[in-house]
Structure formats: C-alpha cells, structure tokens
Length: 145
Image (cartoon, rainbow, N blue to C red; front, side):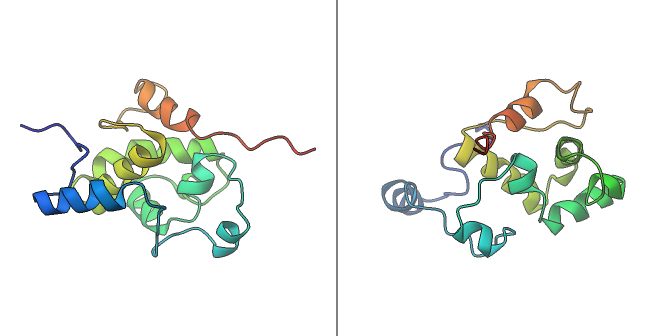
C-alpha cells in the first residue's frame, strides 16, 4: 500500500512523472479557477492569514461546510477568521470522495510543505497539531509603518 499523497500523487505513468518533475514542478502556479479577486493578485496583496487567502472567497468550501451542518456564522458570518478556519478543518474529513478533500491536501502540501492527512473530525483544539500547524505556517503581514 502506498502512502497518502506521495510526490507522485495522480501521476500514474512514467511519462506523467517525468513531465511534472522535470518541467512543471518548479514553475509558478497558474490557477485559472481561483477564488482570489484579480485585483488582489495584481497588487500583490499580503493576506492576513490562511482563512483570508484560502477560505474567504471559496463558495465550494462554504457549501461543504453547510452540508456538514456548520452554522452560517462560521461560513460567511461574523465569526472570527480562526473560528471559520477551524470549522473548515472539522469539515475536511467529511469531504472524502470530493475533489475538495484532495485539493485541500495539495493546497497545503505544495506551498507550505505540510504533508499527511491534515485535518481532523475532532474539534480543532482537541485534534492535535495539524490544524495549529496549518494556521501557524501562514505568515502574518508585516506591521504597517
């Protein structure tokens, strides 16, 4: 049995592995289905935290959270960014079989180097370090001068 999400995840042939590792791996990310406002990308906006860049504008994640019974205040409401992130962390294991599950792991693996099954069905404060690691790996913006 192979490990969960190896460096060759979804690369089923030698040709695919060669193309990815020799040509694509170190290229910039081209994301044509991005939930970031183009203006933020163009202006090199410094995101506040992982919620800000990853969940704030992603209606697919909100839908999964709602389906999982998460209250609206934790999807798009008045909860703190951390509370919303934690609600997503609790939802992720319930998305197995949905592209959100693998996408979530790839989105945290490639930019942050976080590997393994990352999020837990337990409430985040009890689920161990994976949620804290995800949250803490996103650098805070510098103080304004």
